[in-house]
Amino acid sequence: MRRDTAVSPQEARTVVTQLVQNDDVTAIIGLFSSELGPLFDFLQEQRTPVVTPWPGTPFLDTRGGDKNTPGDLSDDGWIWRTVVGDTVHTSGAALRALDQGYETIGVINGSTEGARSYANAFISAYEDGDGTVASRVEVSLGQSSYQSSLDRLFGNDFGAFLVSMPLEDATTLLSDWADGGYGRQPILSDTLAQDDLIAQVGSDLNGAWVASPGQSGPNYDTMLNAYQNNGDAEINAWTPPAWDATQITALAVQRAGEASAEAVERNLGPVSRGEGVEVSTFAEGKEALDNGEEINYVGASTPVNFTQFGNVFGSVAVNVAQGGEFAEEETISASEVREFAEDGEY
Image (tube, rainbow, N blue to C red; front, top):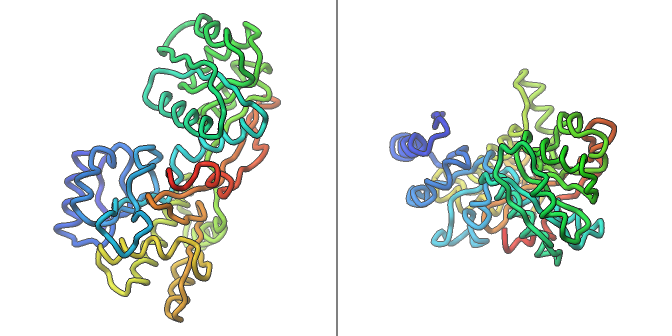
């Protein structure tokens, strides 16, 4: 059963009601960040698991999942996401900054919610790792020059600085930075990993780097082969987490031995948390379960291994500006990021 929410909280409420009350679904695969926050309390009342491959919102960092007590539904949040949240790659960026020896940084961010929340997440992870923010400057967007803001920021002592703002404004700010000869190491928010930025700012941006979610997990090739053997469907960044959401929900039904919402909710954690034989597809998992074995689903997008709040950790790709383009220089593994971010807080 498929229904369209139009990425609208009001329409999503109607659609979820129809799915639960009229269609008697056992789980819902879908819903976006802009819907899950406003509808969180409503979704708790439905007592139907939502397994979603799309939302990056930090709102879900400490909500959802089963609190590592799969047999007890009283503390469940009923939302699980198979895509890495924004907190993951900001943690990766903070980890790399500290590993490079930048124990003190500056931060400049735009006034939009997205730019501000990225900076907040980075700072939280960075300070948890014992880093120090020497100065933070928030700027209104749409300015023709950011020199005065740069003067305020660079009046402090730090080795690297984070820029979090939309591309057009970041282009203006970083052009002012290059023209003013401010120096120091630029760290950019993930949306700025665009070659157009280098083309506009110039070679002064060489060495600037961005930490972004990795594009593939341990069993990406399994998903890719299945898609290529069964049609020409377009693959995008959300295809692997959507594959994982479908596989793991089906495996939860199989392990439960019944297709009910509560049974699925109780089994999403147990089929994914590292205990049992590793499987990458429903077929493999079904065979192992039928043989009386426990399973550990390892995904196409991430290893999965749901946290207590129903989140996943994936690898973080570090792309560095050099020679007119951003090129991947290193990958921070999911296990490194997870250890740094501390599962108990995510």
